[in-house]
Length: 231
Ligand SMILES: Nc1nc2c(ncn2[C@@H]2O[C@H](COP(=O)(O)OP(=O)(O)OP(=O)(O)O)[C@@H](O)[C@H]2O)c(=O)[nH]1
Ligand SMILES: [Mg+2]
Image 1 (tube, rainbow, N blue to C red):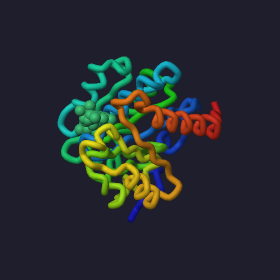
Image 2: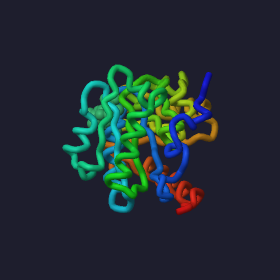
Image 3: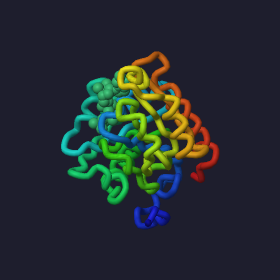
Image 4: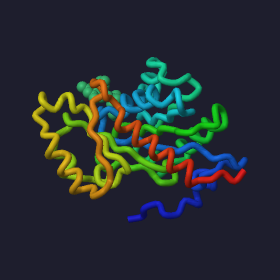
């Protein structure tokens, strides 16, 4: 299988940590996962948690609508000019992996119009367990599943669960109602993922998105120390 090792055909900007003027570009983090697992809710909570200390923006990929972007606008998680919707048509998966041009254009436009940015969150339209982002589009990816989707999802694996840089198991508040065994989900995830991190969240609880926000801050710290600006 071709795993996008060569990104030169996407142009220099995405493969390189710098913009044409030599300033460091934003860290791009993708969020994928099944329909309704809590991707938009996670993006909204991350914006609220990070917006006072970081300059950030969001790109959403909806199938036929702008629902995710409209939710984020309505909730006013960021100023409107920092939220961009890409309408992906029938296959959101394609737009984040195979034909990333519309998404690349959106992230680059955000950096041009509201930049400089520290962080851009890219939400994929809800898809199945195989939805992963091209490395030409994002620098790191988060895969969001939820306990109501079945506690056998980590055991079954799939590229999202197995390879994402962070696996989020959301809606832990619902575990008692749907009979999901969180301990088993944690063990199965660890077996599939080795050392890759897994966090459990409930956006209905006080701790909320905290573990995901901590992970993003760590990634950003690594990004800003390693990638020294040349300009
Ligand atoms: N109980 C509970 N509900 C949650 C949690 N997180 C999100 N939800 C709810 O789950 C529903 C779906 O959340 P979204 O954030 O829209 O999910 P999504 O993954 O963005 O969905 P699509 O973009 O349509 O694939 C919404 O009604 C949320 O309020 C949680 O931690 N606990
Ligand atoms: Mg969504």
